[in-house]
Length: 160
Image (cartoon, rainbow, N blue to C red; front, side, top):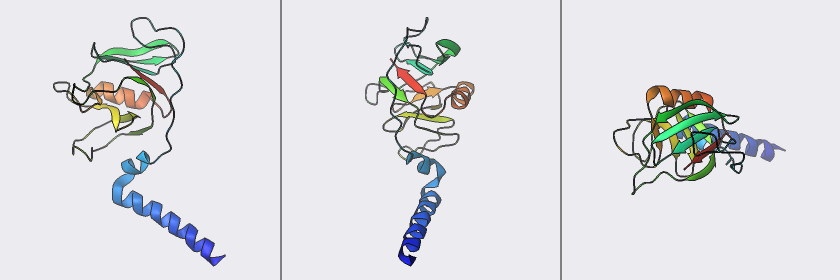
C-alpha cells in the first residue's frame, strides 16, 4: 500500500515539476490530440469552406473567417501565412489548445492569442502581416483576440 501511495505522489510531483519547469503553455501542449471531424455541409457563400468549419482560411487570397453553423460571424479578415519554405498546411484540422500569452521556443518570438490547430505548433496568432510566418496564420491584434475568444478546443479549422 505504501508503495502505491509513493508512486501516486511521485506522479503528481512529476506533473507539478513539468509545469514549473516548462510553463503552463507547454503543459497544455501535452493535452491529448483532438482528431478533426470531416468537412461536411454546403460551401459557405463567399468562402472556400463548408458549413462544418468554425474557422476558414483562404491562403491564396490572404483571408480568413469565423463561422457559426454556416454563417459568417467575422470576416473576411486579412492574414499572413507561411511561404514556400515554411508553408501553412492545408486541410481540415481541429483546435488542439490555446494560450493567451505564448512564446515560441523554436524562434523565441511572442505569439499572443495563440490557437493551435495543426502539428508542428501551427496556430492562429497575433503578428505582423508584413512578413511570412513559419507556417502559422498571423492576424491583427483585434482579429487574433476575436479568434482566440471565439474558437474552442475541438472546433474545426479548414485551410484552403
